[in-house]
Image 1 (cartoon, each protein chain N blue to C red):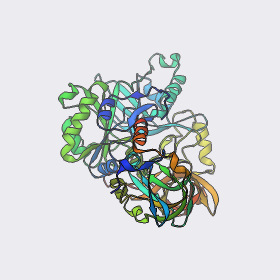
Image 2 (cartoon, one colour; image 1 turned 180 degrees about the vertical axis):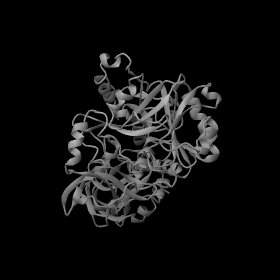
Image 3 (cartoon, helix red, strand yellow; image 1 turned 90 degrees about the horizontal axis):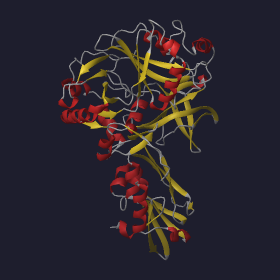
Image 4 (cartoon, each protein chain N blue to C red; image 1 turned 90 degrees about the vertical axis):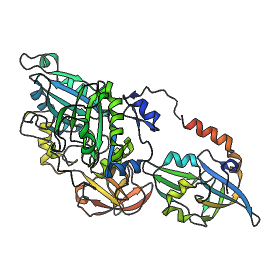
Length: 133
Length: 390
């Protein structure tokens, strides 16, 4: 089980879990519970196909609610090795279980400079509390 | 977030909204809840049972005096002088060029002394503009013309207004008022006593009107008793499945019902014929601002007309998205959302008349990607109970 307290977060509300697999660093990325709670009423998600190159700080997909559409930003540079395409047909799972069933993409990291910009749980929580006001 | 302190107006229900999880947003300068739980849940509850919504932000302008009927007939696009008592009409206010300044409901009532008065309900975003427009046409010498006086007041802060919308609206409200709601026709109203201790023996105005495409009512009542009556409606309605609803589902409901929203489908740059609202303009009676321009516009070919659009995919077209035919822009989206009832993205927009036929295959450019869409009949949704509006 992924514990939200042990994950890293971007200012744009993606969570990141970095693990080493077969000698390569792989970042699993999803949306935080705070972001999903703010969005509500999800109707659509667009995820990149495996093989696509993504750039740190650039959009890797979009998520749409009844109210608005939002870009999702890649916290690292690298190649998408897996994406959770099945989640598009069960968006309620994304909101219910954002850190396990609701993972979105796995990226083999080629540029990890973005990792240094990420927030730990305490810092991210503080940002969310400020945004909630 | 933005720290510029804008003093938002608060309705009498503000504290209730905040203490019940309302997500407060700035809507036309008012702090109102966009939702309490989920827009989709609140939407579906309104379609299936009944929803209660705070619409105290709507501007309420009151006209009375012996000259009121003729004054309004010379201000609004719709006839007023022939209205029956307790009748309500949908009308426009146009500028001298025939552009739409606002879309309004005008209701005709008698006060406790049997004197006639009219209530014009205007959009919150246009209230100041319409008050100024009214005053510009009502100089003291007109307002005080002997035997033809017009008394005009903006009563918005004094009166609260709720909408109760959904198939169980009659059941919910009937015990709370002293008129028979079942027999009240669409676009009719009545002055009622509110039969609940929270109303402190006060009355109000109830009308069979709404902005959801569903059967329902709008209730105007004193701002001071509003929180108590609001709570009473929720308590009474609990067994019927009533839910408090926010502005988010008001928008998705009206879009499904094909109803235009000022600032989106209606602006000063749009004329009533383009908007499909020619029937709200009576061009042969009283002379109102814009009448001559409308007589001319009616003869001319339209540059663009309002249409409904249904998308094939899941991505939602939003306001401003270009509408394309074979890669060439033929129109623009003015509102779009995901329809909770139909489970597809829907939109309204303006297209060149050649592309306005029901079923025409078009594309909508959504953030750089063309998505297939089809011109759809409006409304997207209509309930069986709702007769055609008048």
